[in-house]
Image (cartoon, rainbow, N blue to C red; front, side, top):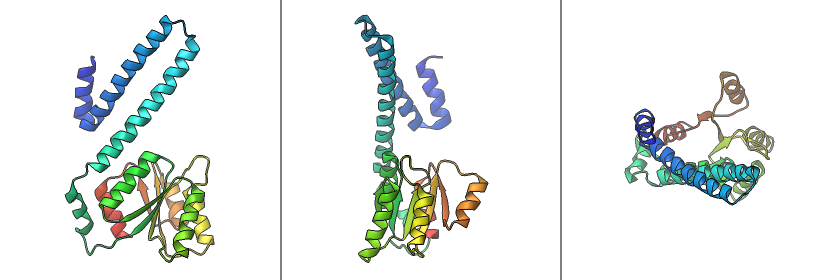
Length: 214
């Protein structure tokens, strides 16, 4: 199957966005292959070629992913904010985000702002605790927190929430955010005081509905 046919089939199954991403990645891969071929002619050791190829490929895919997520969030139509008033009276919320992935933080923050809310982004658990303390001390506390459960090299959302509860937090609505949560973990999170479970990836409308329900 040639590349063109592959992209057409992928587009029919997953939508135009997937075609754009895969098309960009394929073009990058072709460029990288040409660079490696050129490197071989200059007698660069094979191991060094392989390491360079892997590092370049990972960096390119991450960059493309971030660019596409940011472009998608920024291209949301202006009338998308109307979803915030479709049910009941709108109330602006101050929302604390904890997620180690910069593209997820950017996309989620943009979506919340489009919905009319204030978002504060943190990427490490200790920073989230600090942001919460500062908000309480200044008399402008958070209404909602959206915590990723696993933060590499830092305490995750469950430990952060435990620290906040020990510190006396009783009114914050905390949402656990993760790519996959089975029934057992779901039950544990609810027992630990989480108000809602948000599965990745999430959509603007479902995000707005969730916030209204909290």
